[in-house]
Image 1 (tube, rainbow, N blue to C red):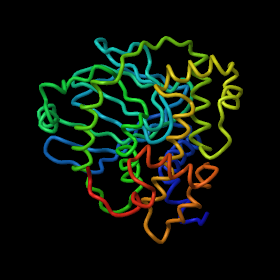
Image 2: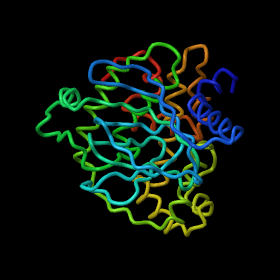
Image 3: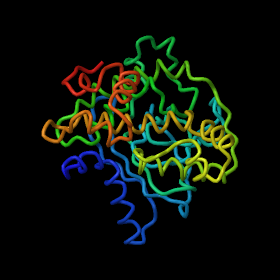
Image 4: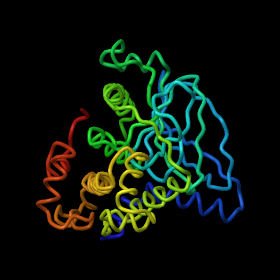
Length: 311
């Protein structure tokens, strides 16, 4: 792989790692740093890098508006106020979306690993409701604290990640509107879950998620991942799905496909051939890659690489 492609693809994770390295070198406490990318009347989008880790206390905060945050890198535990259908800590992983209601208290903890990077949209309640296809049916108040990395979210997540890695113009207002509408439609159909998993199991699953994030192209079958987590395959499969909302296979596949989508979105001089992208992202052959990509994104890799409208 050429260096320009490595720079483009690793940009999201590199910024987080640099912040963690600087924190360690300076002996600082962990903290969240927010960089506003764009704003308008009733909305803001920010790049948020958090360097907190297991030695840092989590503090109760409060959502001042409607919040939707894509986890672009890292992991953390999200606990929100009462009244949600998912109880306990929600494990936030790359590709998942944090959901916050105005006035609701919450805590974000890093008990099992350091750092995360999120793309955070904040909407004034009246502005958010105006983005919904049918506000009366979509229930502006989120009943669950997060959406896992579901197939229905893959095209949206890939576009948001590409925007975060982009140096030039990004249509953030349009992406924010699309994000609000899609999530409001999807959140009503996601089944409710009760999460009650021992901290040791959360730590083990978190270590596996971080491994997948670093090496999505590696040999990551159920047996290998379970061995890494020091759990039986059966126990690991159940625990992983309860914590992340998807199976290990789905999580690995979507991590690989997100990486492939980023490469296909790269500027033309940096773009590899589709065969090279398939092999580099961990697919054994291009036919399997083409089939998986079309199932996930609704278009072929070649079609995805062409300029397209937001929809």
